Length: 280
Image (cartoon, rainbow, N blue to C red; front, side, top):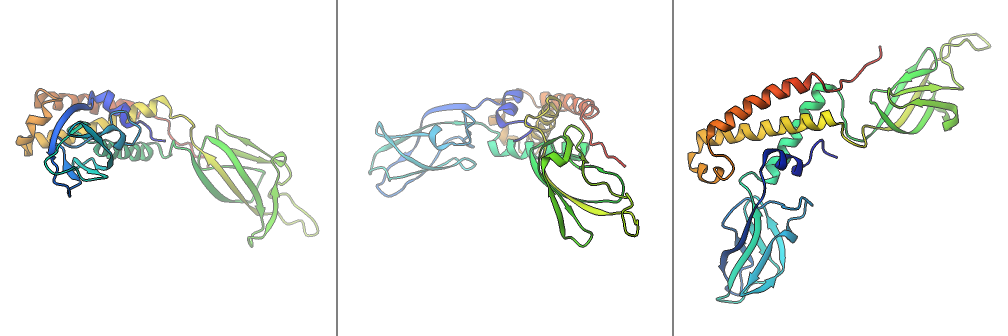
């Protein structure tokens, strides 16, 4: 589960995939199965993470099966080579900003959000071993808790004393707090009435089944900023690329003003993101 999807990001940036119909990608020679599109990178227009079924190749009007698509290079591999002299046409979708670039931007945004909040919002498995020297409650490092897999009481030497049944503990999922019902650390016990100390091993799943709206908004803003920052560099260092980029942007100045807007929005949203709460 990502904090925002490639589809979310394309819609937010208005980076709609551009449909190309009947692009002449080559002439068959009876041997070659590798052909290059006139435009690249090829992108996934229906966002199902499968591009092969979105690329159609026709050889003299007959549909040929696509084996593989190298999206970044705009390379189409066919199952069979077209016959000599046959015209090879392809229909596909492309955009100057590839799906992979958007994916990398989203991952960078997620890392920044998690660093800012001190937590992950994805559903993930955790195992903690906590030394309990007083009381019967302990706080997990990750919350909210989706479910507790097991709670095991262990001696200081690591021997299993008891794996607790769910009836022997309570879990307050929102704050990640576990309360033991049958064990109490620090309580004197015979014959020498020394305080008892033990380890509690908890295996659990924490995170969110759905990404909080504020986190998704932050992911969109941050990933958009990463993408537009890269585009602004392309404008200044690779002017020959403007011809293709201008399909999306009319003037470089629009990119810079959008970057300034996004930066301000990012700082505003960061203040609203839910931070991790530590219990000392």
